[in-house]
Length: 246
Image: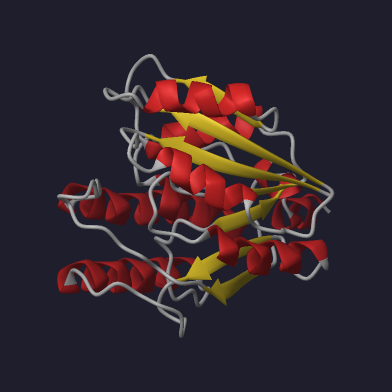
């Protein structure tokens, strides 16, 4: 099995090299590994750092947007470039520990799951103590998403999501910014893919340290939860779509 780790990036010159080192230090229990970095038109030296990493490591490929579009757009580009049987989203900062990825991938390897979410809120691992209202917002968006999808996630907005390639082939990301999180959740739920959740640790950062998501993204997430649950049907190649064709 080949694993693709997708890294969307915007102005992460201080952390990119370190997170790539951590990614390659983990044993994922797979036959092959690739890392796909998409630079979303960074204004610092992030792209230069990525080029240096790619030059020294043939398992790293990079792409660059000529115009800043957002995290969802960067993941869309990364998914199209990836060649793995399983894909996992990894942020370029240090908020998430790649050592947690094998627990996501294992469920897909064992043919138990098609999609695996990490959960920052069901874990006994380390969590940095930060913004109270951010967690309240996350809890509300997860609750509202669950009401629309009828699944019982604990952390819809989490970065760590692993997908079997067949699932990715049924998802065309329409949202350019952080709205892709509720969009993807709605689409995999509508497709009736086998969704699991595993606990992960979380090393959050402050806005001074580079955190980018804001209240406007929360408002857009509400719009996306309604849009992709009420006005989209299952993809015809998903389990639900195939059953509808019978």
